[in-house]
Amino acid sequence: MKFEDVKIIGNIGAGTMGHATAMQFAIAGYPVHMIDQNDAALQHGLDLIKADLKTLHESNYLTDEEVKQVLERISTFTSYKEGLKDADFIIESIVENLKIKQTVWTEVEVYVSDETILATNTSGLSPTEIQSVLKNKDRFLVAHFWNPAHLMPLVEIVPGKETSDSTIKLTYQLMKKIGKHPAALKKESLGFVGNRIQLAVIREALHIVEEGIADPQTVDDIVKYSLGRRWSILGPIMSADLGGLDVFNNISSYLLKDLDNDTEANKTLSENAKNGNLGMKTGKGYYDWDKEKTNYIV
Ligand code: NAI
Image 1 (cartoon, protein in one colour):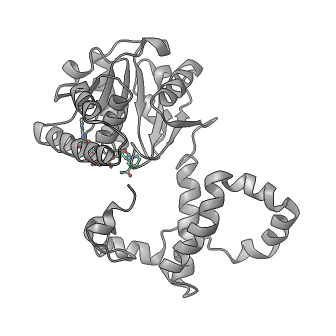
Image 2 (tube, helix red, strand yellow; image 1 turned 180 degrees about the vertical axis):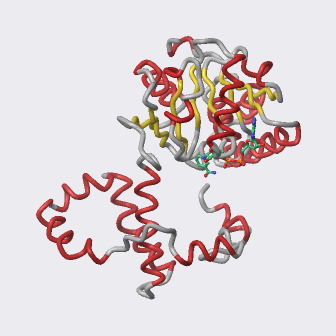
């Protein structure tokens, strides 16, 4: 498959991530075949897409006519056979479960051309393990969008052991074409790169709160008005170069031994999860959430 030959996108899953990847490809001009298990799930996905398009329209990002065209480009299916037989590139965003993903991909491979590129949006499962069930393993990889997929620029491209260079190259080109910033890893790693760094930072942030050093709002402010700004331009490694490696070497010599090195989730994190305090979606987490605040990211 050549990049220029990618004409139709197969999009499996219409949930939190799937509706947004479908919309992103459609905004970039691709016809998208969106698949889910039943009509109710597809309708839910379409409702999410319409709500997001309304926001993009109100933000002057899309005109009335463009919103109409995006919706026209998305067709819905409950059958892999019907929805995927003509697809050139497939992105899958279903439940994060290795066995279920393997079962779905085994079934999907029966209906698609040998050339079709297959991508999973797993948050951290091994592409080598998922691709192990495929007949043509070299055309499979991870394309890890970040949530909300239509607003966050990054897509981590992660090869499995059997992924070919041409599959990586095509996926990279396609992500650029739809307006994303692709970042290709040399090899797979648990949590890829983004989640490794994110979890290390969240672990230390919660540790600081649990130690009574600062409250959540203060910790978030400190990160937002320092690291957040600097890292959005430089990233952590270039920031070290900027500050001087002698300086960071000195700080490391006394500080690293004082940082949290727990191998289990933070105490307050597991307690909140157990008690149903799940953050924005239940109205209570480390913060109290009201409806207006949930629009903060747009
Ligand atoms: P979700 O639960 O919102 O959506 C999953 C969708 O897949 C549902 O609509 C469900 O009906 C559908 N589905 C389940 N089995 C199916 C099947 N066999 N065939 C077709 N459709 C099926 O889940 P979400 O959050 O969108 O996550 C999906 C994937 O994306 C997971 O692998 C997750 O780890 C990953 N991901 C999630 C992120 C997030 O912030 N939620 C961020 C990046 C990746």
